Image (cartoon, rainbow, N blue to C red; front, side):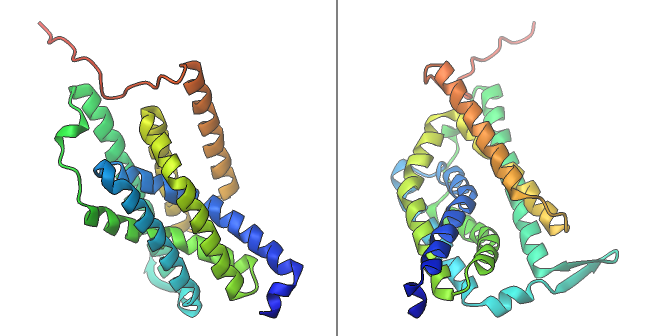
Length: 250
């Protein structure tokens, strides 16, 4: 408890909490995409459970630091290239994100071309969505916990920062989700973000380090451009699905 009497501890707490919130942006985007397929009444519950699951995953990883550090040991060799447990987890998560984002983008474009909306499809169950969220929580939590270990010297500071970050995300997740859901073009941009994050995870798994500051800057720039587009259209978003059927060729 003596650590909380020092100013450096509070500075590290605020810095780490801010960093965790930034790293949680991709988590909120992923939650929004997955929960958008659920009935409206189930979406807030799914978001809350997903964020609580993310908090639980990060805390478990923090309290299992020895196991976490052991993930850096190569467990698989392919053509003289060693892959650690962390590489396999990141690579698997990256492939899943790429596949999920591609499937969602294709579904929306295909629905627009065929003139059929997504309402005809049976929505996934809450359990299926929560399982997908739980699996991706492990992937997103790895970088979050590794960052926390490198930035904070005390375990209690890391735990407190995790609670603060998840609390902030819970407050704003609903507003972010509603905003993305109301604007189809913004939802397509969110899917593009997930595709980008999936490629980034695969690159990390292959040993290619990519500065995340560049990724987040690109995301922020694209988001700003889309906000300008929405303002130019006087807040009348472009509909992706309500495309009139083309007349048949003679």
